[in-house]
Image 1: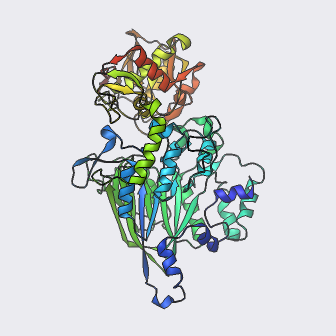
Image 2 (image 1 turned 180 degrees about the horizontal axis):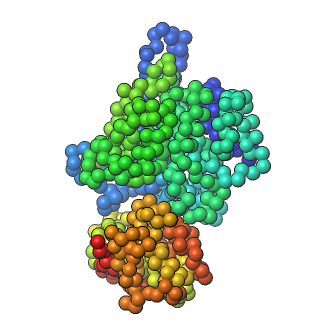
Image 3 (image 1 turned 120 degrees about the vertical axis):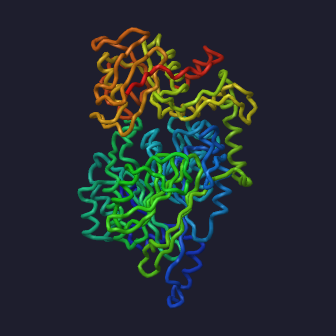
Length: 609
């Protein structure tokens, strides 16, 4: 690692102290308006205002998302249509003033509709730059194509396989991606010494002490931006569970450390260069009580709350993501102070607005001044014309592929889980993957991870005019946007039962919450909600025949699961791996073989007390 490389990975401004922070962190108009009056300190106000506008989990939704993904409960309790890049741009413009910084909490890309994914999410990253995002935490989906691809998105260049997009050579993101808890597993050579040298003499032994025993960041840990003459520091964090929910090969050289530990190191780093107003952007969050206002504190305390309550008291605000929920909460920090903990839904349906005052003498946030509001991105406003034209330009480029019909459905095929945890669409995908791998891979059953089923197939026709019941390639891609391979492995009956036990919490695989694998239609079993882990699954059958512990079974799954993704560690013990088509190609081929599909009944799993 060269010193120049580390400078790009280190926090903005910390390389040469607070003076360089100002040079590296762009100033707002309000900053410039106050800078020339610095000599008139006696006339300066005691506090100055700062506004944050935040997005999380955009997932490349440049077009207004459809179905339940495009609706949001608003402050009145009404469910309204929400989201879409042009509407996000309009709402942001209306909310922006001279005190504003725009930030994000990760998963801005990845698991994206074809419009963005076809070009490796370059259109979405460009859009986020156009609306003025200045810094974002990385999310787990930023690693979907691996660390090397994330660096290309950050710094520019054409895709190593697909080449340049129709827009030409990619120039890189205009905002900073941050990940304080993403470290190199084994930094090469004198990386630590070069990192310290890049900081020069700033911080001296204190800085050396901070980095010693912590590690070398693989991404910038923090960024500093100036507003109204005061610096605001942003700390980026991604869920520590990332290695279990992305393909392992792409992050094999990285390690993801505890979010609280990383935040505390980054906070001290900011304090070393005089930055006291500190905001965490964390791609981790909590679930909520359904149906509540986006402004309610409906978060059910979980890992997000743990982070928000345990990070250093120097940190003033915690903006979260990952769980795709909307909430505004006040939590207590380790010193007994009150701080904001919030999230803004997903898919560009909510903008979190945070206003606060910063004391110009201490440069710290006045906690009592913090006011937050989750603003639903309604579609009742005029869409931004520039962004509308921008999105249309990419729609025109991808249209020949996206609008190609691949089959028909007789009704909505949804990814909404039934009481057993399976869904019609999940079962359909499993059947498609089984069909694609029977001949070459000798598959006998298939299982699909529920998190990979990203949207429903709706019967109603879309704006492109394909007609009711017609499924286009673009719609199918939105359902399965990861380009995973369909693979087949051999498991014993006992190993298959262990895989199914690993769907539930309480086992050695540390499953964080229940994840019901979607079964092909020829696989049935029963699970008991009250049974102990290891004894939950019974009556396991394939094609109506009971499975024995010693028989060998060929199981079709995607490569993400074969690598132990989603905490299904037992899959890594599979043998005789066969690799087949991409999951989206298997899905399209299934429609070609079955031109009209009726939604399958999600009745393969029986639940008992």
